[in-house]
Image: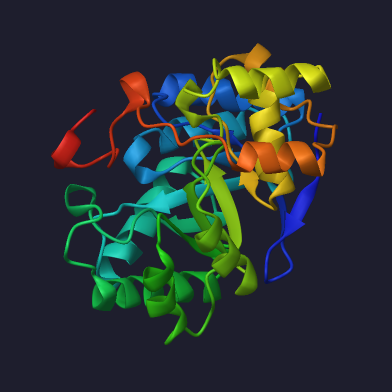
Length: 289
């Protein structure tokens, strides 16, 4: 089991490998947490938008390990763009999960999902939302605070006036779609980057060149994809409810050569994710749930 960790800007350790829980209902999420924890996972990622926070909390309580041993992330709904809305969101998340605190709280998107990457940037609203995040952090309700899907100018907007810097930016990052400039900007600002969908929603699994490199190391394409992100200094949170996939995903004790990393960095961009080709994930623009 791969158990390495990064340190956030405030000194808190975050496991480099976590479990994503998107598209799992409460019952599935609770079981996934129990299965993952039994295999050695200690980092679980959810969000208000996933509608499974209650299941995550149940999984935590029935996991058989102390709460303090687990690192639980959730995300404020993308539509919460005022101080009061964010505070209410945090209160609801804690109540649904039945937890006294959240290890990492993230603003899910710089814009509501129905306006994702639209013209309105919500700069002023995000500053208000971030002020609520800071106050929750000061009150001890959350141990770390961060962002998700924030572009460089979204980050600069927060950084120019914040009292507490964002500790994380969770973004889409995988072989064939790696936003190197954004990653570099975050790392220069001491903001840890987390990669969601690190296995490209499965779209990378049949890529001939990537399969060839994986075979060279005697690992699966999924394992190679996760290790690729980790070697870029990113946290990975692959989503699965399958215990066997969890086990395989956690076998990451190998190193990709510099030459192979360069090849992987330059794999042609995937243009279509098949059945998962919908962004934003949770908005009326492309409603999926």
